[in-house]
Image (tube, rainbow, N blue to C red; front, side, top):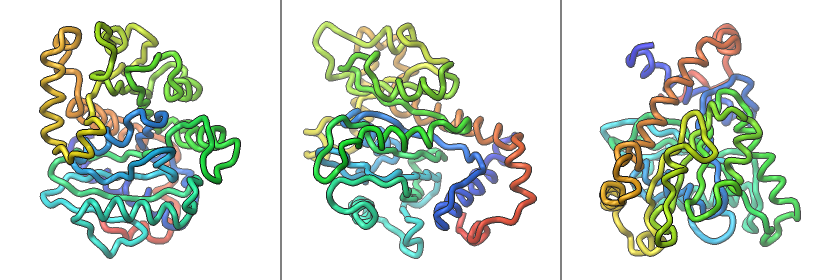
Length: 315
């Protein structure tokens, strides 16, 4: 499929995603998606914010992502965001986007750290993004807090598996470099549903926080726990950087400098970093969208009546 055809198809995928969400109905059509999976404090939020170039996700201690966030990134000359649940409003202040995510999360889950599988749909239009649809899933946790049930870990893993078990789902398994890769919950969950590693991309964060004299070269060269699509390393802003409002573009420049100057990574610097990750995901996602066109479910969907609102949603 040519680029023009893909550009026309991507808005259709976004419309279908929104339409099924808006009627609270499970979509039996295997829509291509990128599921972002990782433990608490693995750096998932920072990776997504680096893609957008804006601070817009809730932060704090404990489970911050408590409902799946379907994030549709759409290349546009103008920059703004809109939610499916209030699509008449355009958000140009990304602090307000964060506040709206928090309010909409609390509306469904309450304020005591409860979780819900009901997604929040957010579109971000920007000249700084490539066309992607990502789903930010709750971070895997071991210890219940607030009014969370004792089996919160099981509930979160069940929710994650619902999203990543589909063959049309690309899994972005986020793991910090300063933990043993063999103990990565994200990679363990991915391996359960994708044992050959055909649709899993490993993302290694916090490379700059590793103990002196250690590095993740073997991981990034795909020699340890290899994945068919390999691993990409990124360097996110530190908590101090975030609290000091360090500009994301400045952080991306610092990330580039880190890979170019580090003796263990400079030979692979062009295959590392947030821009390379975003480009890779865009290419793989287009591949997944194209493959979906050949599936029986897509062929049948063209013949079936569309759910209310599919044709009425703005592309």
